[in-house]
Length: 54
Image 1 (cartoon, rainbow, N blue to C red):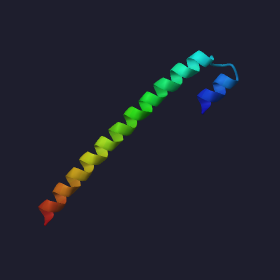
Image 2 (tube, rainbow, N blue to C red):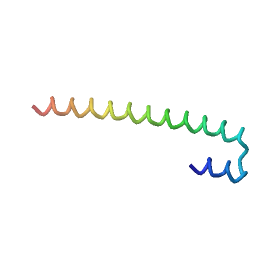
Image 3 (cartoon, one colour):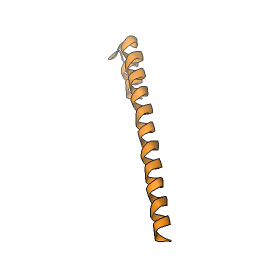
Image 4 (cartoon, rainbow, N blue to C red):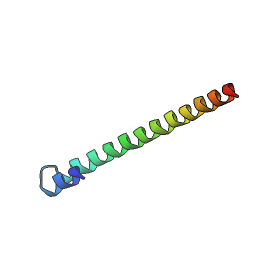
């Protein structure tokens, strides 16, 4: 949101906004993918622990 505000205020050019917006979007998708992978690994480890305890 701050990036958009910066563009509207003329701090960042529209071209820079588009480029930075795409870069931030890519970083966000990568972070979300990492979170899903970690969650999947945690679920797998918890399932293993549950099976070991029974």
